[in-house]
Length: 127
Image (cartoon, rainbow, N blue to C red; front, side, top):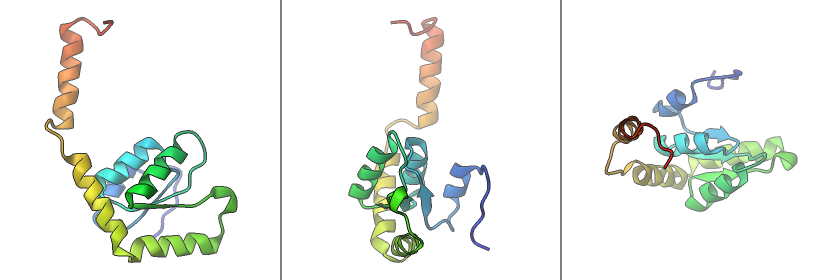
């Protein structure tokens, strides 16, 4: 089958797989960033907190659609999944946003190393 339901899975590793066509998410910041990084269209079903704001931005950027959890129907879910998978503009938008997201002058690992060493050089970062 093409659908697996588990309590936990290595989300970033799964999103990195080239066969992934769609990410159904609540729209939290970390999952959204992982989906953006890998250029995967998203179906967002926000529940609380930053999820609504992240979802609005994702929809506006063109790589996501949104559903309201309290009004969710099977038909809405199926229609949105099919739209996101079969209408190519969502994948194009996801890849465009991914390209911008990845375009950094410093590799993230190098930047993390710099800041760790910075804290060590200055014996903390109280300033």
